[in-house]
Image (cartoon, rainbow, N blue to C red):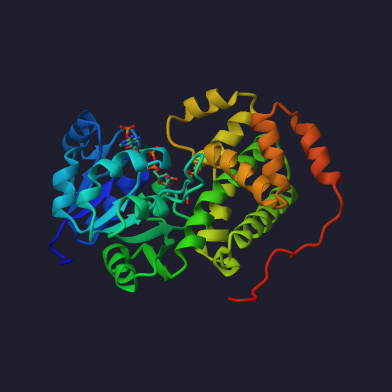
Length: 340
Ligand SMILES: NC(=O)C1=CN([C@@H]2O[C@H](COP(=O)(O)OP(=O)(O)OC[C@H]3O[C@@H](n4cnc5c(N)ncnc54)[C@H](OP(=O)(O)O)[C@@H]3O)[C@@H](O)[C@H]2O)C=CC1
Ligand SMILES: O=C(CO)COP(=O)(O)O
């Protein structure tokens, strides 16, 4: 890829727009693809993304577009910033145009029914593409407002990692490389579930001790689950694991946290999701994660408890009582570095 070649970002939501701006700041020209022509026109004429990232100026190097075929034909580095439910639907029809391209998923979700990670889906659709995953504590608005931020590009393809670092690394955005695509991607998806739980705890006025216990036991659970699937637990100690868990479990800017907060205020799940009007991946991830944990018999009391409250009609006070009075356990019991 030459520095003159445009870079594609698929998805005109908050994160796609934030990534596009970072690329443009680094002097790259960007094709920001979205499905909605009216939104593309609003972005072209108003120089901002009024629906998803109001108040952030979109840089001149960004061209909002709606023609996916020509976007893919012109670009060899492509960031995918679509909700998980849309990724297969968007990429499958253009599978033939993806061979040899570098496709970097930023999507933090898991496919319903199949439990596939997004990069697995991309691999399936485009077996000859070069694939990476970008994940970390990266709230879109903070990225766009130049909060000092770190992220991880994960791929077995070292050259892809270097090209993504060159394209995105800047004064406010540090890009670390990892070869553990599996762990990085899993961390980004799993933490959304615990962000819902933290928002719920926060709306109920729970104390700082409680929040800290929740985050730490969440790390224990997600790592235990990932180890069962064969992931390297060390990745969960990095930006894409504990880093992302901390930001989404402690920030009211997180949409997953906002869903939990709304539930605590007495809204139904449908009301909470519709009030948000943006994607909160943790809702679907909770469903598939609970099913997978049951199947693999992984001990995940927080996931089980949240699932009972959100989908089984259980009362929160009963669930909390059961969590607190369950058998005492060992603190750090989930990391075995054997084999790594
Ligand atoms: N926002 C954040 O802080 C971060 C988000 N992520 C992840 O990035 C992914 C995208 O999130 P984000 O940008 O925040 O989402 P938003 O909810 O802000 O935007 C979603 C975007 O996807 C588009 N879209 C939805 N369905 C389709 C479809 N079927 N075909 C084409 N486009 C579609 C929407 O278009 P339309 O308006 O037409 O519906 C919109 O442009 C998620 O997995 C999220 O977890 C990762 C890191 C940070
Ligand atoms: O993944 C994110 C920050 O790293 C964004 O989280 P939300 O989707 O909950 O806003």
